[in-house]
Amino acid sequence: MGFDGPMTRLLLVDDDDSTRMILRRFLQRAAPQLVVVEAHNGEDAIQRIANDPFDAVLSDYRMGLVSGLDVLAFALLRQPDAVRVLMTGFADPSLATAAKARAKVHAFIEKPISTREFEEVVRGSLLALLKLEPVAQPEA
Image (cartoon, rainbow, N blue to C red; front, side):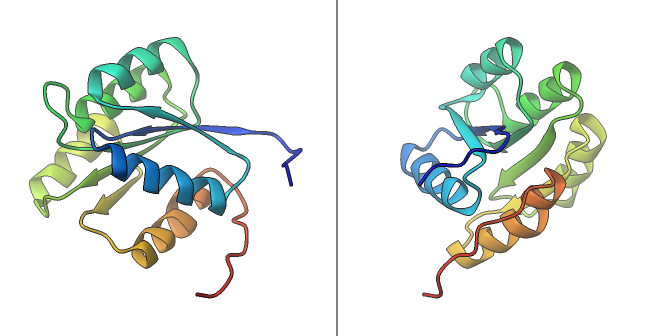
């Protein structure tokens, strides 16, 4: 069963292949109107943002030479209307302050995160910011 409405493009950035796969699958199930494009590191993400429009960028923080904060700051400059979400394993308030100041991050996802918590964040923050209606998920 396909989706015939307008599509929303989301760039998913994480250097861990299995994390990207899990998040992509969940996002596509939660909102079939999302086209999820993957970037495997910060450099790849910046190149994609420079060349293609995105409605949202969901990025891990720690990825090597180019951090998720660098990616989201670049997204703010190139595509200021895009929703920017930072995922991090650091519960450091100074990172949250820097991310809001430098990249005007809309939401944070702290890792590790359970599937249920991720679902709540996606439905409560990301889809709401993108003005998308989530698809009802069957009860587990």
